[in-house]
Image 1: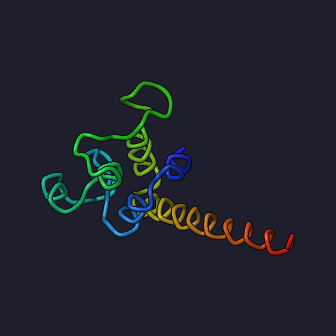
Image 2: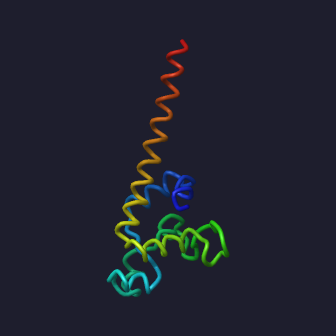
Length: 118
């Protein structure tokens, strides 16, 4: 589901995810993976949705279920709790790079078809 949401990001939003640090926000996830305490975290980086939207109150669009548990932000937190933030963040960044490559190659493919018809 996060992959579908990543397809809707603007280039500026993608750049923020690729270049800025972000970590889970929920304390139980942070404690499980030995991340710094919440006060230090707030000063050092934002969560995924804060990084994307730059909005302090955003937790992302609902992707199913109720808004509190079906948002992109909650799904991100859940995945971080299960697989660890480093692994989840790497998968998100890899997906963004893959999306960019797919867009770049699709425009090349269109140009090749135009050349063949001339």
